[in-house]
Length: 305
Image (cartoon, rainbow, N blue to C red; front, top):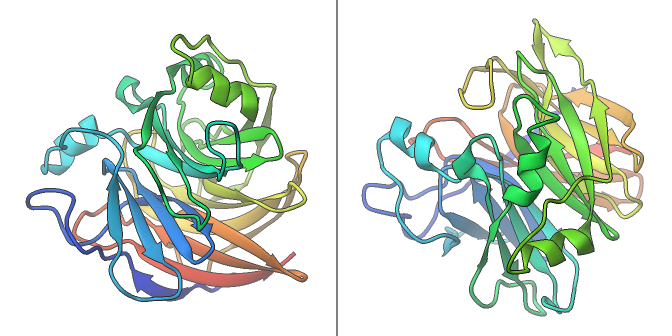
């Protein structure tokens, strides 16, 4: 069993809109750059920015124009459902690297993404570049009956997306693309359909009849991947359900499962960042309580490699 230590709640300095809380509630993707922590929330149009060393409230960076309804059901229907965040290395258009936010693709309005350039200190600079991810996500609907992208990592020139299964379709997979081709296509005026180079499926097991399914991932220097997963009692990629259990695992560079350990409590962990320190991994995780009144939490733990 893995035990988590709560570090803070993801409170923010100013709300994202009228009648919105002073916190992020549905944290769904996590990337750390130095001492800066970036968080996407699946029910917001913004990116959260926090310090990993100071406890002050975080800031929001707007990703998309517009406003979302405050009523939970209507907000769920219209949200872009950003579920994954990845650090992209330096390139011609982003000489200091960038952050890539990815929608789940589980509905037609959830196929948006954004690229945000970084400066030399790892801070966001310039305006976000909105992306239409349909050329990437639409072809996957022929492979997955219930598409739901929940994680993204970059290793070398490869982008890896993590498909999350559910109780009815326990279809976890790591989907691989050429990163350079992916970025070039999405930044061109007319993007052609992009097919993955490979798809690796993983079975993470069951608990009380509910499968463990991916919720996020992070890449290690050797290409191995650390991921978090939850057993959520839900029949599809749209509806929420109770979180029965959760865990942290490692898959190797080829996509083969190396280890999977359960958490001692059923936190609904949906974002993960990992840093290798000798033979241990220092891990940060963020949570989504499926309740806008409950702040997302930041947790830490350490596991053996």
